[in-house]
Length: 156
View 1 (cartoon, rainbow, N blue to C red):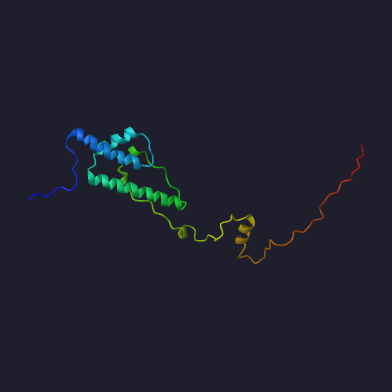
View 2: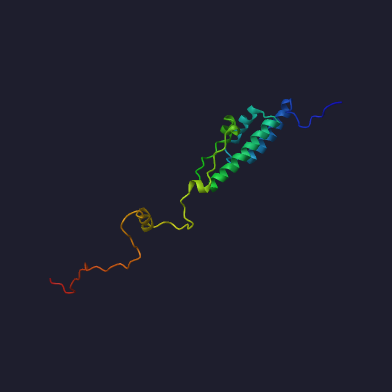
């Protein structure tokens, strides 16, 4: 009785290895969000020569990082730019922890249901809520007596 090998091994022949690694790299390259310096990225990828397990780990982590960044952006969080693909590979960034996503209610507990911008009067009124005096912005403005009238005649 022989046990069947279910997953393919990394080829040992250097020509087959190059084809195998190139095919894996193309899958990585298609997924990676920042397409810069493909040659250098391939060189870093080739140094790794990932087997199926490592390649799956890299791709799963990359998928998770892409989703994590989208979630952060949807929450209005600042997200750093993607690393160049060669740097991501050289620094083994598939092992990085995902950035925490804050829930809306955590970051903005005091938000109003209305999304209109607050006016200066709104801000002033909120800051004076605890004061002993009353501010009423709804009063009719009083007209002043400080209007200067000029005669229409000019003396030369």
